[in-house]
Image 1 (spheres, rainbow, N blue to C red):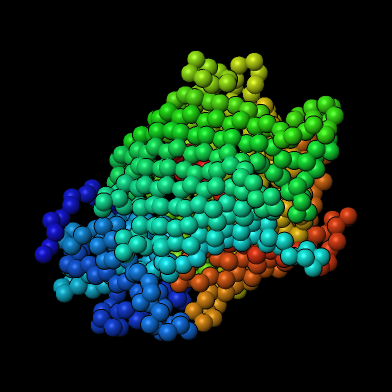
Image 2: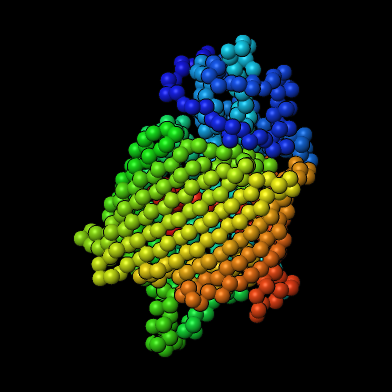
Length: 580
């Protein structure tokens, strides 16, 4: 039965920039599904009546994979009703390419799906069109994992390990039930995670997670962490209202490591201290506009951080005093309201071979602006009476099928008794057009905490911005990093997408600009994506330090997930995404 049409305001058709083409993997999927159904692509679908919407759910493993098909019985494929409720178009409506692209973007944001394709095909009459929505699940019953490991001087060091055995698609509903194990160089934690992104068929989301932390060597409990989130995000361009609430906590011992041991401060005291964090907030959002969006948020939040040294009885008062001044964050509690405006365009480009391999990626075009005001009120329990502001601006300029994205962000807290915080962050990302063999990436950033009442620092070194050097080798309130990376196009090897990389890293972190001494490294890397399991690449890098005082060979190996430096984006604070 045809459902009644939903009236929406007319939207200009998406431009040619949305039609940047598909990867070889996506083309093969489309060609096969069209051939099996005897369908052909519609070259000009805009405005034609949608007479049929077909949902095509691909098996996790098919003839492209060297895995027997019977393995699919162990996996729950996303149910058709789950996909249909994400669609922003229906039978009986005119086809709008912008709605099709937004639907695809929303579906790609679901971790359970890897391949997502929304394809318009010819209908039974010239003025009609059919729509194929093709999705491929990742393996739902699986051991989600993340590993940050390095090999230095022949020794293997596991800097961090996350194991999250879970059912990501319980009964095909996208409900998540899982366990959680996290290990670093000093501790391990055990816990659980629960979540549902479409509670009772609505657009409301809920999640709950909790873990206990124990010392790896003594077995003693060192604390716990967890979160509860409940709310409804802005799930489409047409959504006008959003709201959310969350509570997060973390009680543990914070440590900074160097050369796989707890770092020793200049005072001689190990860099480890008690940390007690608690956050709670509520937010209401009203969204205006369609192509040019104005998202106005108001809310109330409480954020507490309490920090204290461990047992320092074996050190002199002068050592302890210097350790506190150099390393210990300042305890602080902020309670008060906030207001926020996020202004951005809803024009996107679907591009290939940037952050992942063989799958389309969506990147916002044009301007992206955030303005936020918040407060701390002493009468309500805040440590400081303060007025805080955050301003961020980015602009994405297309260059062929690449782009340039500069970003600048500033946060200023003017507080009583000159207890001020202020920082500025500038980032530039250049993504070259595809050069036949791959893309050239340049990413540079400069961070400066020029007012640092809270005594926070940046760390550089390890598997990301300055590969080849020990994790946390360089620490300071100011940071500069320049990264150039040549990433090859992907090859399909037994259904895995495989690419290579060559990189040149430059950077340093210090407390004073005049003390910058740029360190350099070079290296090679391998990128692998298994679309049956994730959209995030697995990364293997081999980095070689070039600066005096560090052994260039054999360098250090790193195994991790995700690219070495994240795509810069305007940070949009939300109680539903707040982290500690």
